[in-house]
Amino acid sequence: MNKLLTHYPPESVVHRAYAFARTAYDGKIRVSGEDYFSHCLKVAELLHDWKLDEPTIAVSLLHNIENEDFSQEYIEEHFNEEIAFLVDRLHRLKALTYSGRREQAEYFRKLLIALSQDLRVIFIKLADKLQDMYTLSSLSDSEQQRIAQKAFDLYAPLAYRLGMQKLGGDFKDLAFPYLYPKENAWLRKTVSEQFAERQRYVESLTPHILDILKRESIVPSHIDARAKRYASLYKKLQRYDMDLDKIYDLVALRIIVDTVEDCYSVLGTIHEHWEPLPGRIKDYIARPKLNGYRSLHTTVRCIDDRITEIQIRTNEMHEEAELGAAAHWIYQQSKGTKDYFLRKSVRPDERELLWVRQLSNWQEQFKSYEDFLESVKRNFFTDQIFVITPKNDVVDLPIDATPVDFAYRIHSEVGDSCVGAKVNQQNVSLDHILKSGDVVKILTQNGKQPSEAWLGFVKTSMARDRIKAAQRAKINLLKERGRAPR
Image (spheres, rainbow, N blue to C red):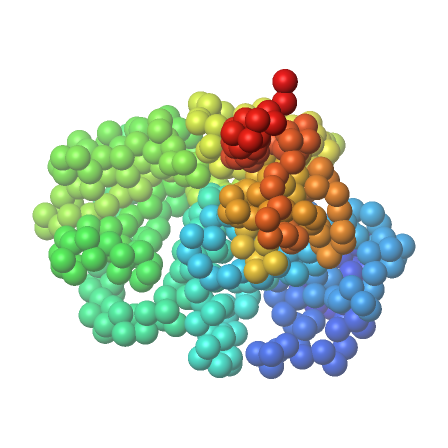
């Protein structure tokens, strides 16, 4: 039996999806040369490591099946409505193409969130794309560049925005050698020895720190060394004239404890023994980063006067730093009865950052998975939709926006000359309400002028102002001709 299956009972949806996928993918090979089933199994194993629920694991095994082979109705009949919905959402995201222009990346990240309607879709997508990165070497140079750029611009920032620090770093490190081969070669040649030497030094500090903390009756859960990633190291080196001696966190010591009180006790104890560098103490517990990251960072002069960065956090903070929003899907058994979501409270933030905060720091206790999903649907992008041009550019509009609003967002002349619209290749009226994910094409006619009736349904001030301006110009022209309306 496969190792993944040993974690789930034989009657579980994971076992059923595993058997279904083995048959559905039989004989199908990916461009990289890997068979589809092996790829999906790796994605499922990764999501299992992230501790996501059984439906998520099941859908990850099914995520590459084709619509023409297995319809949404077919999946619903053989599994259930939840599984069919998640598979359908993944198919919708798969149909989108990313233009690769950096200015589109932020809109595209928001579009992924808005279209998914369920964060598990995003987790599966990210796990799928991470596995793709491990097979890049078998592809052509142009494909390597394209996929690596997409990982760097789109998936790494999305992972960071979700608070999934490790995943974001993995995407950037895997993409870096393909996007910056010369810089990567220089780094690995120049830094490898220093990495090894600093790693040995930091590891030698561990028994000293354990002894110091023991005297204060503090017992850390564990202490480890974290090497700085190559992609972020190169970016930081550029700010310091490529001088490695100015990079104090090339290898940082990480101390994991049980409580927030222990974090500050460890910080105080460390400072009693080793001199902290001025301006290098960062309290991300009192003031978390925008993606919810929490930890204490300090840089001190340790043994032999070596400058060393030390990070201090709780087990919960460490899990959140690794898994971010996914950590809030981890459930625990409370005396074997009821599931509950992890939580922590935070201060309210600006509205444009609210969705980031809510992904990383839930502000209320959710009694059930249904409550969790309802909050996502209620709070994320309640005042925005994201629609797509025929060239796959993403355009943001207010909720209940129409094709006329879309036309004016493209260009004022497109709005003025608009005579019709197609949404998802179907003709629609100009007052049609758009939804996130719609592909919109505007039909125009030379010499056409905006209609006053449009004021009854447009939602954007841009469209409204342009229509009113056109009406004023029309009235002024009629006045000149002595035909102005009374």
